[in-house]
Structure formats: structure tokens, C-alpha cells
Amino acid sequence: MEATPRGRPRRFEAGAEREILLDAGLAVMRRNGFQHASVADVLKEAGISARAFYRHFPTKDALLLALLRRDTVAVADRLRRATDGADDPEAKLHAWLDGYLDVFYEPRRAARVAIFASRAARRADGYEEEMAATRRMLVAPLIDVLRAGGRSGRISCTRPEHDAAAILAIATSVCDPLGTEHFDNRDEARDQVRRFCWPALGLVPQPSAMRTRRSGT
Picture 1 (cartoon, rainbow, N blue to C red):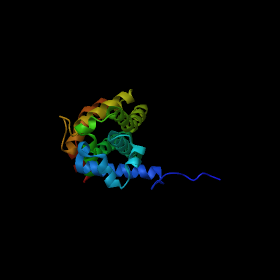
Picture 2: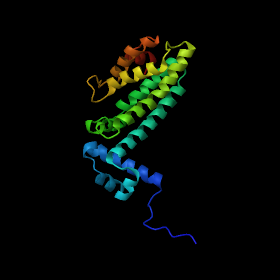
Picture 3: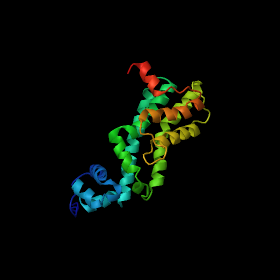
Picture 4: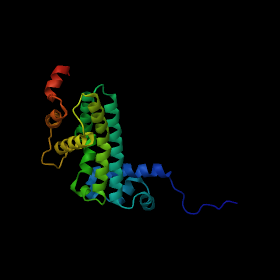
């Protein structure tokens, strides 16, 4: 005869329980900011016990990093789909850059960035290591674009990993809401990245306003 399981049964499967806690954590951090979000607030939002919380996240910092990882995976997937769907190397570059800018300038996504980029969040245990993983995931589609463009001769690029890292760094510098070089205007941010990066790739940067007039949009 099988032994009867002891203890109170879980209300949710482990995966669903974790997602509920992540969603609750995001909701609380949006309202209160990371610094003033408490585990008690998250538990109240989720309707889940403290025991369940600590089954998945040892600390509030761990919850933040899990939220950052979930968002990063989603963004990296969108960037991959955008670059794969573009027709030629230059169009793929534009697709990657526009997708990356969406993270900072599309209002709902920008609200999440404000949480992850806050000074309090940057002090979270393990933050720098997670950000390094974030950069690797976000730059991976760009590396593939540069590598393929270099092989085809459409883009001047012999060191795709290094060039992709440089483009990401410049793009981040103009988008970071806490950075001194931050642009409030999306088109200006896009043009700044192109002005510095496109000539290095053998491309002529075209200002956003000119592209808009020519496309008729």
C-alpha cells in the first residue's frame, strides 16, 4: 500500500505557481518600485503562502532576477523573429535595432525597464551576472545578422561578436533611462546609433525623418 502524502497539498502545479508569483511581483514592483516592494505585498497580490514563495525564490532579489530573465527571453525571441523575417542584411539590422528600441520606448515595456534599471534593482545580489546573461541573449540575433552579412559581402564585418557588442553598447547608452546620454525621442536615439555604427559596417545611415517621408508613412 502506498503511503498517504503528508502535509497540505499545493494549490497549483509548480510551474503555474511560479508564474503567478512572477506576475504578482511585477504588479507590486510597478506600483511601489523594487525598493519598496515587499515579499508580503507579493504574497497578498498572488494569494499564495510564504512557504510557496520561498519554494521558488529565496529572496526578493531572486524574484527580480527571475523577472528580468523572463523578460529577456521574450525580447530575445522577438528580436530573433524580427531579424529572421527581414529580407536583406541591412533590413535585418534595422529590424534588430527597432526591436531593441521597443524595449525602452514602447510604454508598457519601458515601464518594466524602469523597474529593472532602477538604482535599487542594480544593487540586487546577482544583478551584474544576470545582466551579462541578458546582453548575451539580446546580442545573439545581431551576431548572426552581422556574420551572414559579412559572408555575403553586403556588410563590412570581420569580427561579428565584437561589432555586435559595440552596437549593443551604443544602443544601450542612448536608451538607458538613468544614463547621461539618454534620448527621450525614439527617432533621435535610432539616428544616433546609426550615425556611429552604420558607417563602420560600410552602410550609409539614413535619418529616420527621411525614411518616413520616402516610405509615405
